[in-house]
Length: 184
Image 1 (tube, helix red, strand yellow):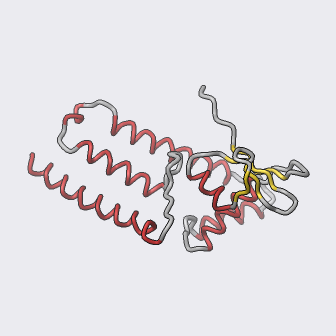
Image 2 (cartoon, rainbow, N blue to C red):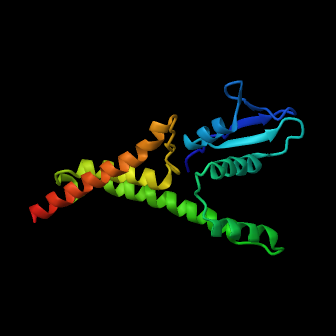
């Protein structure tokens, strides 16, 4: 069993400032979001009480992204989450969500592994291009979940790049399909 790296420890001071213990500097929620997109696990603790505040801050990051129009969670899912918290019964929603995300990450890893493994199609012309397109498509669809390489647009132009990339991928895929049909 592989060793999992220790989470990045972030301490919250009484002033509510967040301190990165690795780099000895203060960080923002956006910085923490970046660490997570880069594949790091984080743990946020209150310096004085020692309470684990990780969930609270992760939910705050999600809420800020949702409020900026970066909606990922459909309203129906949010309603179900609220219902699961408000009912007095033990909810299966957390286990279901964890299993769903685990399956998504595993499926993404298997697709990438199958695309890169040696098989009879390995000699097919254009396979490398198709693999790169598949990888880009999976990253676009999952936002880099589990790959440690999520999108990081710094400007409005950089934020538009995924749409341009997707259009380029669609065009290349159509060209490959055309070439494959001619090979038949």
